[in-house]
Image (cartoon, rainbow, N blue to C red):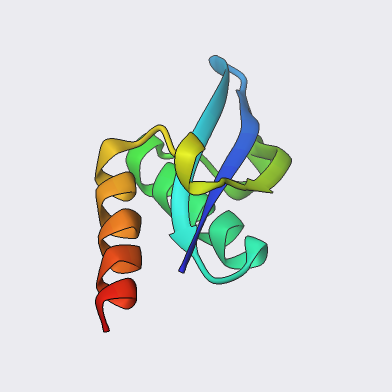
Length: 82
């Protein structure tokens, strides 16, 4: 699994904000879908209010989310021991 950072903006009539979200996914397209699903459910935003600016794969050293870092580094360490 890879970690992707999705950067974008939410543009609603009463809310305009930018976001950066890190997610685990296989492909960038899956990461975008996951971000859409999370933002739509948590913030009650429609997909057409969300504009994705950039999707990038994040190297292990640059992962900001501590939970994701532990998951990914844990997977890597288990793979090296076998």
